Length: 97
Image 1 (tube, rainbow, N blue to C red):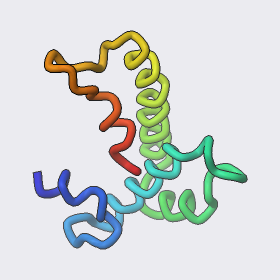
Image 2 (cartoon, helix red, strand yellow):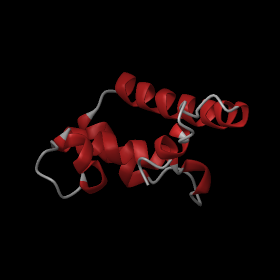
Image 3 (tube, helix red, strand yellow):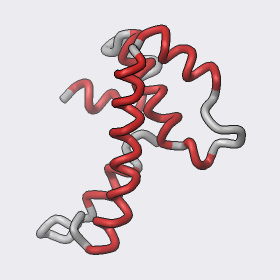
């Protein structure tokens, strides 16, 4: 739970290794890819490649893309609403921002 609560400050928290920071930084860049002018920041990808293998980078990219694909679909269908009416998908989409 401590790591989950610390995620918004992953860059400055000692709970995360350099490898984990690189993965989280890359995840954030993939999440914001469509908003970024010029695409993926070269520095982010370079740092990710220093700590992660190409299959790991591909897996992170696929996982983020999958969530970004399904969140609008499940949201539009109301499938991401918990029984008590709290929108689950919204917090998940905003998790890294």
